[in-house]
Image 1 (cartoon, rainbow, N blue to C red):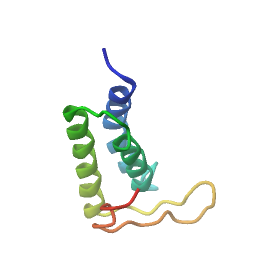
Image 2: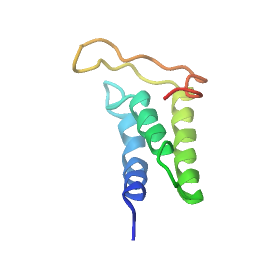
Image 3: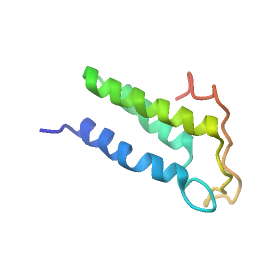
Image 4: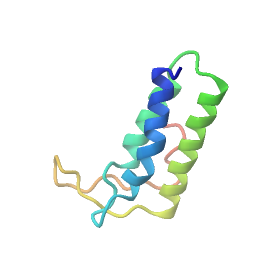
Length: 94
């Protein structure tokens, strides 16, 4: 039986990469969104080793994406460009 945490990890695993690659306008959701979701999962009590490994793997994928460079896209709410992240920004932020 999958727990809610397992379901959340599975969902993020399925949708994070396509969301980051987005379309011609850039990512559909920015890396900061995915980082926040992953750190929220890390804050959950009683994670199993498998869950921790899955979340760590997703954080590494996110860092690889940032290192490769992110196409620009405007935030639909404000019309302003999303913050463009640089490698190393991933560590120590939640």
